[in-house]
Amino acid sequence: MDFNVKRLASDAGVFFTRAMQFTEEKLGQAEKTELDQHLENLIARADGTKNWTEKILRQTEVLLQPNPSARIEEFIYDKLDKKLPSRATNAELLGQYMVDAAAEFGPETPYGCTLVTVGEYQRKLGGAEREFLQTSAASFLTPLRNFLEGDWRTISKERRLLENRRLDLDICKARVKKAKQAEAKAAAAPDFQETRPRNYVLSASASALLSEEVDKAELELRVAQTEFDRQAEVTRLLLEGIGSTHLNHLRCLQDFSEAQATFYAQCHHYTQDLQRELHRITSETCSNAVAPPHSSAAAAPQPVSSAFLSGPSSPGAAVSSLSSQTAGALTQTQLAVTGTRKAKVLYDYDAHDDSELSLLADELISVYTVPGMDPDWLIGERGNEKGKVPVTYLELLS
Image 1: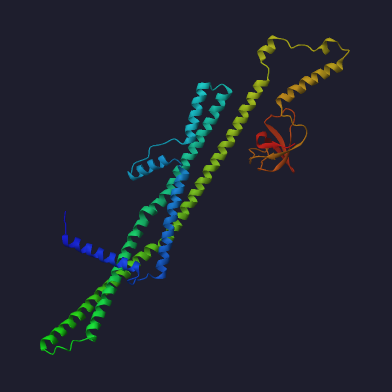
Image 2: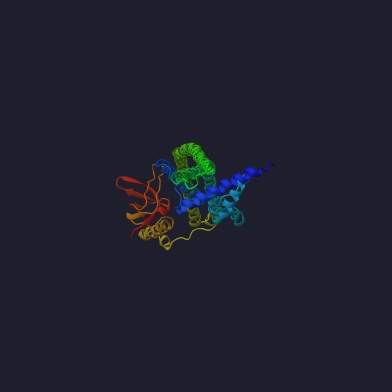
């Protein structure tokens, strides 16, 4: 290891001198070279970009991964430059638990069958969420991190160099000022009390030394001014690149919004499919519960009404009895809607074919039922439009 004591002492002296200059500027005891207004505006804009980028990045990470422990784990793997192990999403875990529970309760039972159906769709939702997280991390989070860990570090380094060059320039200005003050003081108050030739020689020698000191300080000032101007130009070019950073972040933001829209559209599609499956399962379950078992119907004859035993003298009573039995069966299998009623739409619904009617939340429509219709559906009318609508999306008004 090359340990240079002289260089170390020189660097320590420069650091101490800069610290003295910085302290005097803060106390108002020394002059400070001000940057031009354009450069000051660029610095303020860059600081705002850095601060808001950090806030947006942190909050996006919280949105995509609410678990703090998982975020810490991802941070550690990223710093170690290792691939993060695959982790199931919460929806995927929920779906797996539902499928496992259905296997224990029996998938042929109504509850088990519903658990299997909901569990499969939860897995689909979890897969869509996993794809959204991966897309967002690649298209949005990574560019923001690259700016903070790459471009911003370079800008910060050059700004620190500019600040050091400014302090060196102000130190050189102070030296020139002191040297000129000493030279002017010596020229304004010569020593005429001593008339011996030796004193005149010493006085001339002191004037030459002071003049030489002024020349040396002015040379150092010109060198410091040149280095400061060069560093200011380098810093200005880097800060002007913040505009291109904004354009890059704009494209990334558009990609993130598109991925988010795709994710929510997939979720909406899956949940609508799940609702239709649940309606089908509920309808089949209700049909099986209402229909009489075939074996018992074949083995035991149906009881004959007393109206038929009385002979043909009372045909009206027989018809009345048969009509009452039929009406009772219809009321068990169909929704009790008498005539046309008003209904309020609870959720948006997109029609899947020409026989259905699309709905908008909070709108009012007219609904009614027809004989033989699926009990989970009604006929809806809105102006000249008419079609089937699901009962679960409606609130019947009295």
